[in-house]
Length: 427
Image (tube, one colour):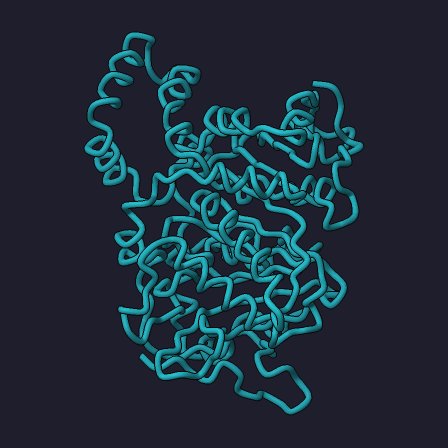
């Protein structure tokens, strides 16, 4: 598969990757870019490959923080975020059962630039010319993502100095700490754009797997799903037969999502139908072929399988000690391995002054409106925040659209670092 020229010029006065119109939506109200960024330091060689990106800016994108959003998997499409959860688009179902794309009134691009890369190589529109170039493990994949990000920034130096937020969910709890490390290392390389990384937002995140999985039966017991006797039996079985049990659960529930806030997964087929249209591919500077049939890459899932339970708590610790801000998000109805009990367990394993300040902080109610309902609970201190979201599952950013309001108040990317929202109250 030949990756197209990522910068065909629609008009001499427009950036070469600007999205000038979108089928069924028309001219974007705010600046958008889409196309391909090479995963190589020197693009254009015979072994070159590229990741597809989509950037949706604010009304003042040159002076706004940028959120790089990633879904998990491993190998899941970040179009989940772009089209279904918190990005600029949604698909609305009409009375006939048909879906039509619309602008998302709750999109995070209302307060920050929103950027996704389809990563790793091989996911949806990030077609691999040669499968030997697929990353063999998560660290290789993150190296490719970092280089694509740098090449994108070189295409758009107007946002190079903007504060950067890395945000994502599930296996992005592995992706994003590694990407943050790559950014901080790359910032020291002469000639590289220096990125102003400020905050990591990890939602229902896969960070310290063995610690998190040890809480699965406790979560089930706390929700009345099992009895104490069943918990004891399950704990014993889990200790001796974890690989077989996990495989059976994946076959039953799907490789990516378990979301008890909803009765079923949000439909992805409308996304596939849309991005496979020839007029859409032309509008976003993607080739007309091949057709995308899945929301995740089985090849990546297989390549990453042997390291999927590796812990990156040490990476989080190093980044926190280095001064990066972390905002952790838990959907309280998430019954996957990223449940809030497991998140609390790995948070308690963090050490140092920042972690100590966080543990001393009280938990407060979170309200979007002082007169409105309680949306969740926030613990905030030492550059570390934990938002526990009511009525939300594994896709907390989808289940609670008001989440961006809490992030806006907590993240120092908007010059509000460590400030507790004024709509919080003792809880």
